[in-house]
Image (cartoon, rainbow over all chains, first blue to last red):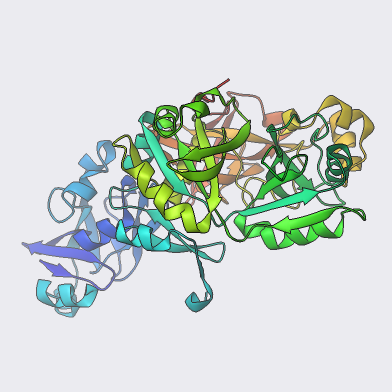
Length: 119
Length: 375
């Protein structure tokens, strides 16, 4: 699992990245009550704001850390957005992107570097 | 904001020790939430008792030769009936500007504290206290004195268990009626206790000397029915209760009639006027208003925040959301805003423009959950 400076995580399998927000990010946001996901088929560019996560208090942008095409959404988040709080780095994933530039993954941090980044 | 300029309330250290997330609010460092989070704090308050520190709010008094003189002076500044307040009784009102807009909303009490009998005790919003205090003082006729209480702390105990919790410290508080107050000893501490709050629940507001605040706070938290609650849940609680937040749902451009606060203006004051801003209030009472504050209930799950455009079904802008978020007790998004009067009836379908998408919603009755004030 790799992490961005905007607190998203990425895992990659077969050229497809699964993306969510880090445990640190969900703790900062507090209770998640709604997640607005991009449409399947949308072509996204790295660092673009493509989703919104709403807590009781505020709406926060989610930035996609890699470029590509959105190929799948986590439908579970519609009925149970609190999955993002309970299982941020597993079942609470947001969407999957078919990578168009795998080299972008090299810009991301590993867990040790991310933990240091968030202090 | 320059963080060094932020002020701290008497209970700052206790909030930090409880693990609160502290945020700047109205030039104070205030707890927005404790580790359990806004959702749990909100629900705890509705089901048990929540304890809030609100010492950042402004407390002051106005004293004249007798109550009638003082009340008549205050009635120049607010549209409420101050004159008929009985000792210990309090009312919600608004300071108005010359154009009939709202400079702030406030609570006015006919004091029955020993040594302050016949004075008015007034509580105003933290963000407006500088303006309010100067405005009130400047407008007092000769012979009246204004005093601000910078050494008083303020906390609120809110929720269905609030009465039993406070009665365990002094059973006499049970006899306080809604919007009445008195001086009570609580765990050996002299407190001004009023049966009021801003959550839609039964509860109390407790004003004590700052030096006594920590002891009372900790005494109340010893009761397992009580948990500390931050400003985040205070906001979602008051929104569900349909209560206005100054700077959002009411401001210097909105009148009390547009804000649907007509209930806070007594018949005598409507007829006689005689307060700053009366011209607009009386005109709007007779001729109506072009926009009204209403509840808005989104049909879906997405919250619509402050500033969201409200459209009619044809896509024409008819208003704007002034407070919006997620209502934990409603278990869905809730909002308030202003719409053109033709669209103000409950059930009117509207659409909200959230991130470029038109989301269906309806004008809804306020409050979103029934008030449970002690009557």
